[in-house]
Length: 226
Image (cartoon, rainbow, N blue to C red; front, side, top):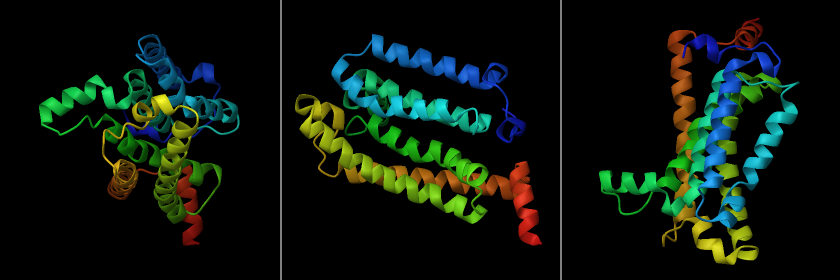
């Protein structure tokens, strides 16, 4: 994928955005497969509550606010990882078991992979939102994705625990995927935090070494110099 995809900033109707249509079709295919082949429908519904809200947000804001194709790709990959985990429950995910055997892990770490991906894959779209939609200064747009990743991850762990304990006690262990680790929540939050730091660091290096800036960023940089 060329850099021109990542920095496309013009608005266009959905029917002419072929990259986004492809991402939507891929995600819908993975999503449908996760529902059809799920081993626990109740857990699938519980895991996908936030997916419904996230997809609704993207649809409602598309006409006024559009991400770059690179951001939509990153969002698509993250959502596919998440819904694939909901198909079997995170603790019983086959890919996690395969990695456990290949890398000699002590447990199924698929949930840790998705938590890390939350920070690593969504930090760039968040940065883009702050920079392009809200017109925040560039340094703020770098810092906020890291802080928000940490905050949302911690808040999600609390909500996850509360929902599982109050409404779905039978699915609690499968939904939380702690696998007997009392520090599971703290480790998940830390991995998301590390993922966000790593993503913003990589993007910063690429931009500084390759001049990889969108039109909005170039205009903001010129205004700052003046």
